Structures are given as structure tokens and as C-alpha cells.
Amino acid sequence: MEKVVDPKIFRIRYLNDELRTEGSCRNGRVVAAGRLAQEHEKIGAVAAAVAAFDEWSDGDDPYGEHDFGKLDVDGEAVIWKIDYFSLDELHGSDHPEDPNVTVRILTLMFAEDY
Image 1: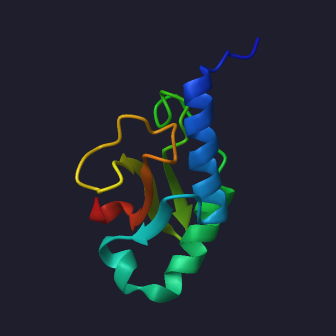
Image 2: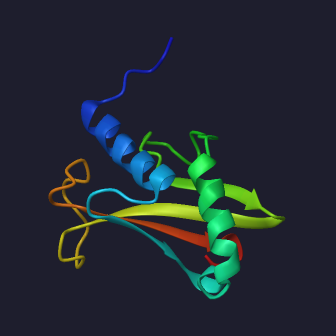
């Protein structure tokens, strides 16, 4: 039997998947951090692997929001995380399900940089 998903969580997951798979969404952006930010030639491969990611586990996705993942890209461990901020980006968003009041940031990095 499939688990019923709260409409708020379903909306957050939809917006997160949109940013992760398409590289953009309303008030969303993708950033590379750590060593990956310096290795420009690898960013495309990492972004493509994250877009194709579909291995959700309870440990990495306990709330069903599709906001974190770990994977291997060309022999290197990569992690990615989506964070939700208020429009001024000074505080966390109180309503991550609402793109009108939330900035989504997808951060890509090598796991060793975390």
C-alpha cells in the first residue's frame, strides 16, 4: 500500500524535483560549493547526475521532500541539498511550499567538502 503524502509535502517535493531536474524554478537556483565550484568542467556532469537521481531512502529523505541525496559521479562521492530561505535570504522560509515567499537553493558539492 502506497503511503499518503500530505499536500504541503507533495508541493515541496514537486518544487524541489523541478529545481533538481530542470536546474531552475521560480525563485530557485543551483550553486556549486567547495572544490566543485573550482572545477568548472565537472559541474555539468554532477548537475546531470543529480537531475537523474531517483534513489530515495528513508535515511536521506525522511520527510519525503526530495531535498537531499548522495551519489557517485565519475568515481567521486557527491552530495546535494536543497535549502529554503525567505525572499531576503536572511532567514529560513516559514512556507517552503509557496514559491512566492521562498527562495530555493540547490547546493552541489563533493562529499569530502561537507
